[in-house]
Length: 342
Image (cartoon, rainbow, N blue to C red; front, side, top):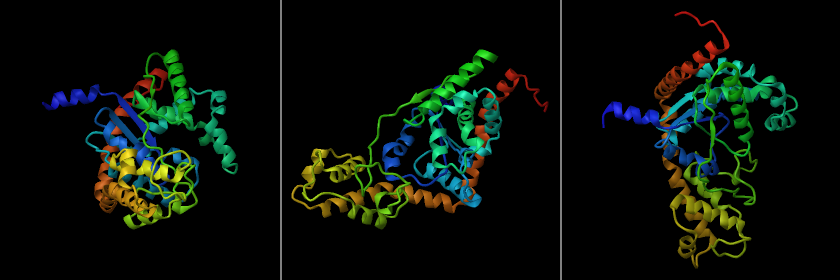
């Protein structure tokens, strides 16, 4: 296949864009539910992933911690299998087009529609001491992020559908006022991955904000920590490995084991027939540790090679700026800004 043919096929792929805030390491639930699929969809789509550090400014944290979390988040994407030869990966603030586009989108957004955003209401209630303007105009910046790259699809969860509709509304309003400029993005709803529950409360979803360290597996936990957490996982008193109603703890462990080994529930039941929960918990822990081993090793290698990490960030920012500036220049012309002569 010629280089031109390969490039043409790549350009014909639909664009998926997703921003990830640098707010901590993915859990096993995040990984099995979504992240593991990212390296698969990059074969089918042009995937643009960015570390949304500008969005993270709505929360006040130590500046050095923010910088380190941004580096870690970028490295984590690469460690999970995102290939920078196939996907675009960059840090949001490294591309100045985002801030410019965000302001233009602010001016295309209505106060009333921003005030109705449920995420603003929720976060204001949780952080009454820091209800800043950025929290209010967050959806406008998000709309700018998406529209800059003329994204076809945006992965959305239940808490993001309102933001996507807002983006479509703003884009429609801009197109009507200034002429056809933006593609209207659609939601991307991938096949649901495994729903992983807390190891200590299997009726609740596994979350990195859980205050009980035994409840959550981080994808960077080492093998001994992973096995220890699974050994302490909540089960029941029946001592029978089978999937059925009322066995939330065992059901969760079987779901995890199935997700990392590919075995069916019936096959797992047969494998552990006559064996105790101790054997099963150990097997699940070892399987998960092995599944996450490449991620841990890749992450450490990338974080230890600062020159490589910074070069990948630089290349990502350069490419992202080139792509986004095409749209931004068109937008500036549309709204009547006088372009700088170079």
